[in-house]
Length: 454
Image (tube, rainbow, N blue to C red):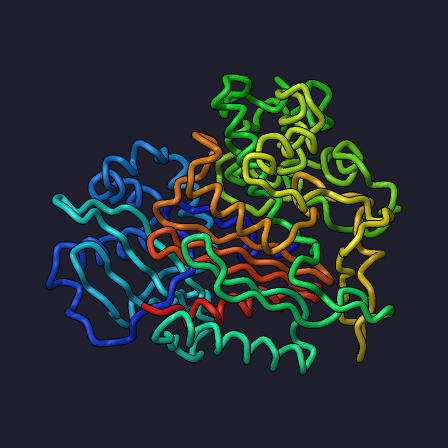
């Protein structure tokens, strides 16, 4: 839940994991697509107005219709806040429909950017897939020749990391919905020496936000919710009247609301075992002043997704958890995904372990009594693969995110880390679940990304 670098990255500007081919390529200026990429980077560094002008002139019309400009600009701000200004350091591929570059952000990250264009004229920009490859000076990607070589490399890497206690969990790789590598290592319960299994249920942290977002969009499609409605329409007794009047559902969804986090001093002081409903989270943050005027900038907000969950319950007329089971889990066939009470006896559930001095200790005392619309539910690798398949098949209808640029979602908190990445263009899904502190799963996923065959 607390991992802010990767959690809920559902950007149409771009988010998916993809390795680059590190061969020579023509200079950007030599092709129309390359010149668009140069224009993108120039606009990215110039600011919001320049990005709006760029999208208007260069985005594919179908893509513009699917993703409103406001959403694009909100996500641009999130990306720029994390990366800083971009500088292209390497052109890895330069084709009419795909341009791949390596760029360094002024804030430190090094990223691969895959720009996808329409295959036919006018070759409008469809999406940008973004892959973190580390910090300045880190090792370059080294794609494997095929899936068999990839699986062998991943298997050995996972075993090595498990032997040094740097990884404990499950890794699943799939192509077009079919797994070709599934591996479990480490213990689900160290005290009882219960090993992780390939179907063990792991706490997936903020990945749950993706489910909440689909629930919101389904209610919008059903006419039960409007993205431009303020909080007060659904929650008239919300503790902060200013926020209730100013903050819309859209701002909550895009994390531009100004509502802060529920983690902090109040959460640390609370009896966490008594936090068992969405309403129980409100005293941790809801009465606090807004961090900024809604829409002024973006800020990762667990609190905002608590409010979204309450709005989902009000608009649907159902308990939030029940509605998401019906709207998301049931269509996808996700039978092993739920928000289990932490004190419930749940078969095959992994306990989390967080570093404490020279040893690791259970993370039980850091967990709320039950997870929420912001995170903290449980799932299996197989269920999360079913989620990617359901997205690809359109099982969620208009509630689904735009997959043209792919997606990556992750979550993390003490003793838990999870990452799900899907590239619909090439069909690869990477799912990594860990019952250790971040970045156990996200670094594993990043390594696997760099090995994906091209």
